[in-house]
Length: 144
Image 1 (cartoon, one colour):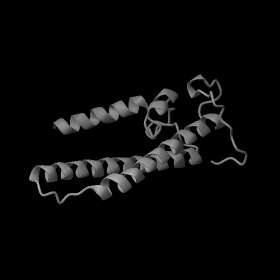
Image 2 (cartoon, helix red, strand yellow):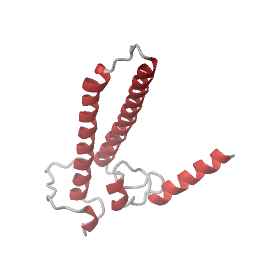
Image 3 (cartoon, helix red, strand yellow):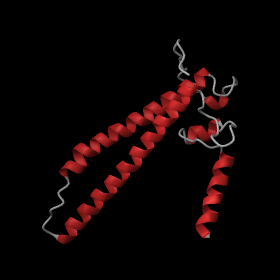
Image 4 (cartoon, one colour):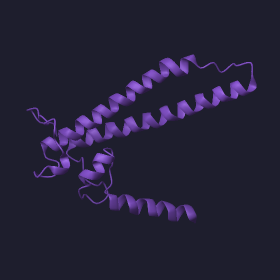
């Protein structure tokens, strides 16, 4: 839920040391800025790759080894860009959760995800315990 007055995050702000309520306006703005900066960095890197690497890649090399190497590099770059595109989508979803007042809370349990986890993975939607349960279920079903 957007606020009418802007929130200023101090330059030395550390959400782990914030003694105010979990996901207070300063903490939310801190994570909003972190997500926006991350998204901007991904877009900047992606644009550089498209302009420099992918447009300059010559896949019609006369030497088979050179062509195979160029095609492998090209495919790797495209996979990387696809992962980044998916990450940007997750960042956008996290920004919407901030606006909706749901950011920082586990989608499964409703419990706080925790500042340390959000610092490490700002797009996290599950608490550490819920994520571990989810991964254990995936491993169990994969082995069957």
